[in-house]
Image 1 (tube, rainbow, N blue to C red):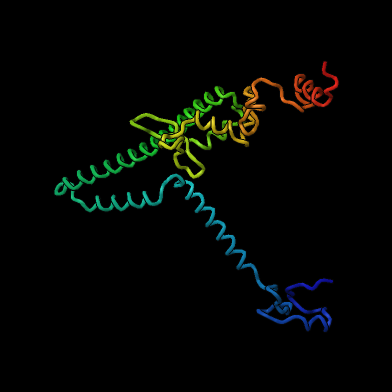
Image 2 (image 1 turned 135 degrees about the vertical axis):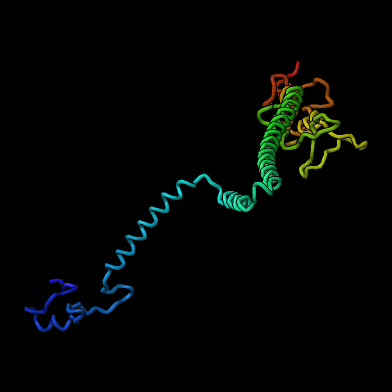
Amino acid sequence: MALKAILESLDGIDDATKALYVEKDGKFLLDVEGVDGFALEDVNGLKTALGKERTTRENLEKQIVKFKDIDPDRARAALEELEELKKLDPEKEADKIANAKVEAAKAQLLEKHNGEITARDERIGHLTKTVEGLLIDAAATSALAEAKGSVELLLPHVRSHTRVKEVDGKFAVEVVDKDGNAKIADAKGTPMDIAGLVAEMKGSDAFGRAFEGSGQSGSGKQPGAGGGNAPKRGNFGGTREERAAAIADKFPELKG
C-alpha cells in the first residue's frame, strides 16, 4: 500500500509506519530524504508562482502583438525627438520647431531615396548580367554553328572562357584563360575572339570530337592528309573503297 505524503493523525497507524512520519504544524509529514533532485516538498507555492508567470507572459504577448511592426530603434529615436520638441516654447522657439520638422522630413526623404537607389542598383545589376549572358550565348552559338560544333555540348565550355567588358560605352565579349586573364591570339598581342576560341577547341583532343562534317579526329587533322583523295589502305573496317584497297594489298594475286 502506498504511503500518504501528509496525515492529519497517526491514529490507527502501526508503529513501524508511524516512525516514517514527522510532525509539522499539527500535521504529520512523510519523512523523505531528497535524492538527485527528487524530494517531498510543498509545491502549492510553486504552482501559484507558475500560474502568475504564465498569466504575465500571456499579457506581455498580447502587448507585443500591438507593436510587432514597429522598429524599436526608430521608435526610441522618435520618442527622444518628441521629448525635445516638448521642451520648446512654441511662441519663443518657433524657428527651432520648424527646423526640427524640416530635418525630420529630410531624414525621411533621404531614407526613402537611399532605398530607391539600392533597389535600382540591384535591378541594373540583374539586367546587366542578363544582357551579358545573351551577348555571350549569341556570339558563341553563331561561332559554333559556323564551325559545325555541337552547341549543346560546347556552349557551357565557351561560357566558362568568356566575359563581357565595356569598351567606349559598348559591350564586347572577351575571351579569357583559366586564370581570368585576357587570352591572346598571336605574337602581335591580338586579343582572341570567340571564333578563335572555337577554332582552338576544334583542333583540341578534348573538344575536337564534338565537331562534325569536317572529317576531323580529336587532333583536328583529316585522316589521310597529304594523300589527296586516295582511300586509306590497310583498313579492313573502313569505307568500301578502303576495304577494297586493303584486300588488293593483302592478296595481290587477285588483281587483274
